[in-house]
Amino acid sequence: QMINSSIQQGTVDSIINQIINQNDLKAINDLITKLEDSIEKFEITEISRQDLIANIETIKAQTKSSKPKKQIIIDALSSISGILQALPTAQILSNEIMSHITQILSALGSH
Image 1 (cartoon, rainbow, N blue to C red):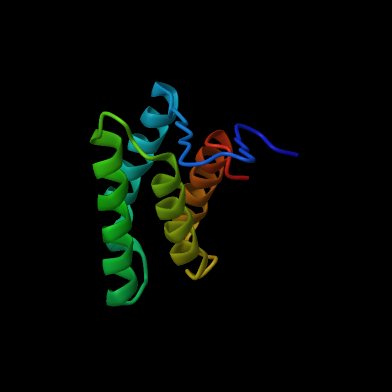
Image 2: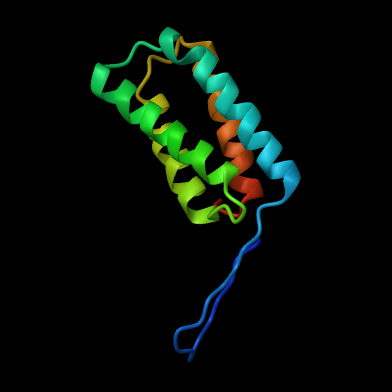
C-alpha cells in the first residue's frame, strides 16, 4: 500500500515536489512545542539530548521555509522517534509524543 507517494521511471533530472499542507505544518509545530516543553523531563544521555535538539531545530527550520522539504522532516521525526523509543516505558509523556509522531509520519505518507 502506498499513500501520498510518487514514483518516476525512465526520467532524467526530474524533480518531484511534495507539498506539506497547512494542517500537517500545524500538527508538526504543535509537536515541536510539546517536545521543547518536555525535553528536560526525559531521562536521556546528554548526547541523545543534543541529537534531539538538533532534530527539533532541523524541523523548525523546514517549517519556516517557503518550501519545506518533506523528506527532511520525515527523517528528523524518525530520528526523534528512535531517541524516544529508548526511554523507559514508564515515561507516559514520551508515549503521548510518540503517538503524535506516528500520526504525523502517517499524514506525510511515511508509514
